[in-house]
Amino acid sequence: MTDPIEPNAPGRASRRAILKCAVWAGAGVLWTVSVGVPRAGVLGGTARAADLASADFSFVQISDSHIGFNKEANPDAVGTFKKLLARVRAMSPPPAFMVHTGDVSHLSRDAEWDTAQQLIKETGFETHFIPGEHDMLADDGKPFFARFSPGATPGGWSSFDRNGVHFVALINVANLKPGGQGNLGAEQIAWLENDLRDRSASQPIVVLAHMPLWLISAEWGWGTDDAAQALSALKRFGSVTVLNGHIHQVMQKIDGNVSFHTAMSTAFPQPAPGTAPSPGPMKVDAGKLRTLLGVRTVNYVLGQSALAIVDHPLGA
Amino acid sequence: MVRFASARRGALALAAALAVLAFGYSPFFARADRGNTVTIDNFTFGPNDLAVAVGANVVWTNRDDIPHTVVSADAPAGLKSPPLDTDDHFEVRFDKAGIYKYFCSIHPKMTGTITVR
Image (cartoon, rainbow over all chains, first blue to last red; front, side):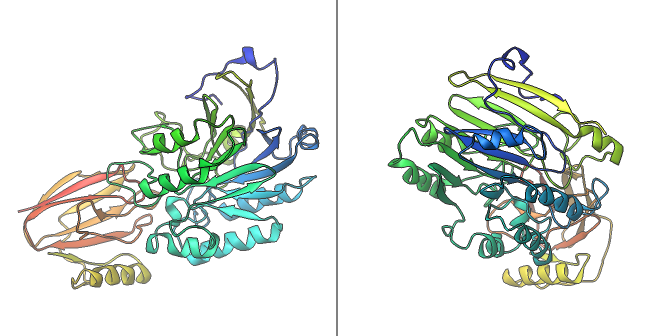
């Protein structure tokens, strides 16, 4: 797989592997945090134990489970979700917690959320949820927030600290405007500025949001209209990692001290921008899907803005 | 005035009915003249700009394998469909001349216009 946003820069790959990212169709990404620099590796990968051993703690990002989806691109989205969660449960040492970056359900139905919630509960891992636009289809998302983030602010956004890392969970799928993209809104941005105001610039920040906080495709609406205002509040921090879902494929970008990462879906892949007439579910047969499984290594050298990305397909 | 009609499933129809009642409109569920159709395909409303006569019905049909909605782009909200899954329909009767701009609230890049005259 190649990344249409950030071309490969293999020259940097050999120097110092600080940040490794994984591509795993239908699976998740394991994140570890060590000395403030989040690192990622494929679930079940052989390098995991070493990564975890040197980590202060780890957490798992899952995204876009779309429980309820049953179309050709994956008639069994529940089944692939279960397989992912089984991999997480098999991790040793286990992650500290999980984050779900939205589109838990496909159609905001209680039965869909029930299924997801039960399966996640069975893992025993504390899990932080933010909604995707598919979770906002009933009563402006109120049923989602009541079920998955009852302790959040009335708008649904929240923050928490873990092992010295500050996590900010943003909502950019509410009150979407005609012709627009993701939307944070003035109230949430003011809250974010206040939430960050008294924090040390040396504290690592992890931002969770469903839609990408950088512009990936204007044509497909893969961006957030007022992301720049939120990012300006994050500028002074030395380590900011933004984790998104929504586009069902891994893409990365580094901008100064901010690194952006979109995640794979556990349900179905979507095409890269410009490769299909629409961003609808990408239909591939089972064999083809297997060839899309793979690992991606991303080497991030502190103090340098360039990403070095190497993709490793797993094959059959 | 805008009148709403059937969605595919009872639950969706009920949701549509409740949405309509909230705006003071009377829902009806009989399928009427099918001449004016908007097909949702590849994240696009087609035709993107449809002109109809006063009193005409317009039926939206989702042919994508991802849900979409039909929601008024201008305040006050007059159009508000439930989520339309694959092959779901949403039908509206337009009783008053005007330009009705709408969008998909899930994929807001998707916009369209019904011109009633």
